[in-house]
Length: 98
Image 1 (cartoon, rainbow, N blue to C red):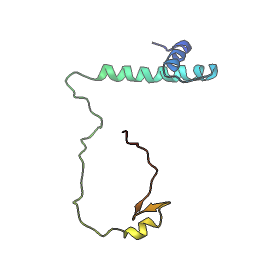
Image 2 (cartoon, rainbow, N blue to C red):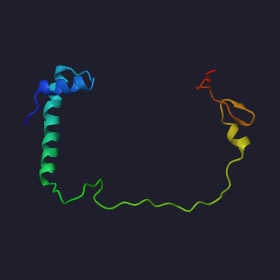
Image 3 (cartoon, rainbow, N blue to C red):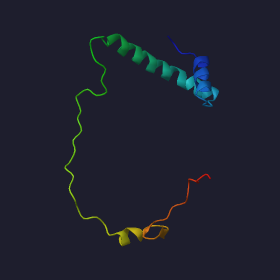
Image 4 (spheres, rainbow, N blue to C red):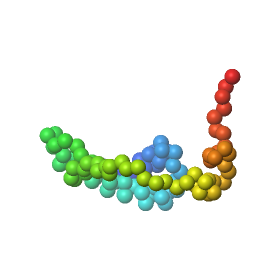
């Protein structure tokens, strides 16, 4: 199924992406190649093979939690643009409603 320039223009409109006629003509064959590759993979995928995200099994490796020295608050606050009562001062973004 070949994508036409009109198909790509419709997709761009749905995605709210503004494309010139030259961009549409350039993208149509590229998107068509992508769709053909996906269709080819879909034909090869068998129902008895579970979907995966990686070719090999991955597992998380965590390091042991260890208590370590951290920077002194005074040193860290020297880099703060604003501070108050020994803490970073940041603009208020939430307002309490009465």
